[in-house]
Structure formats: C-alpha cells, structure tokens
Image (tube, rainbow, N blue to C red):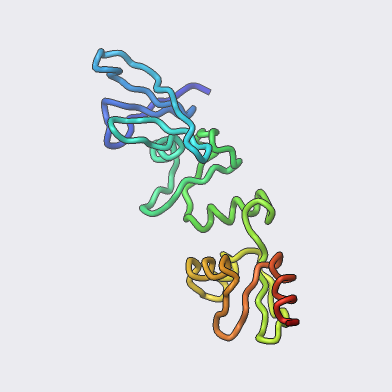
Length: 177
C-alpha cells in the first residue's frame, strides 16, 4: 500500500497526516524541512502528536482525513481494539455509547461491564442486564446518576432495587438482618 498524505484541517500547508497513521510537519522548526513527528503514548494507550501548542490524537486526525461519516459529536472507534493501529480501514465514526458497547462485545463483561439485576422490594429478581448502560437505556433512566448510585450501593428507582450481580451476596446478608 502506498502512503497517501493529506493536509490536516486547520493546519493546511503546515501539517499532514497519512493513511498509515503518520503525521509530518511541512516546515519543521521553521527550516523548510519536511519531518515526520514522533508520536507519544498518552496515559490511555492512544498515540498523539503536538501541533502548534495543542496535542491531538492521531486516530482522530486520520479519521477526519480518510474516513467517511463524520458528524459533530461522534467519536472514533478502533475496530480491532488496538489503540495504536491508526489505519483508516481500522477506524470508524460512531456515537460514544456504541463505542463502549462495541468494546464490551469484543472484551466481554470481565473487561468493561458488570451485570446488573433489577429486584423488587422483597429482593426477588425481575430482570438481569448485561451492563448498567443496558439497564439505563432499556428502562429509560438517566445513566450518569444511575451508575453513581450503583457504585454507592444505594440504587433505588421507581420502587425497584438495582444491584451489581457481584454485590448480591452483600444484599442478601443485609436483608437477613
């Protein structure tokens, strides 16, 4: 595959990004030298470069230049879940919730989510959800507050009790006393 370079939006004529996930300066240190920039690893495993005074994720730069489907508010998903693989064919624009669920599907519940059970006031199980995101979406409950109350072990909504499945033993012990 041959390398294709495109100007980075907002930095036209100064910086370019390639379909192989590389970024270069067209006027490195104001010396009219074209130079590939050395990416750095951020704390979450993504590669980024500094353009001017700001840091940019390389996967986002590649997607903006080479991937169709951008709309404001969308995030970039790595299809193979390798955060340093920034080739356009490995990237897609999607909504943040889909990105989280995609990772959940790839990695399974041990990596990203914990099952949530919906109980009645007597502790009988009414439903099991793969994740808190699923429970909030299906029951139309605002996710942020729902997740926070689950973390505090005090999740009561609409007359129901919600617990992470691994917290149920604690709940049973509490009910017996």
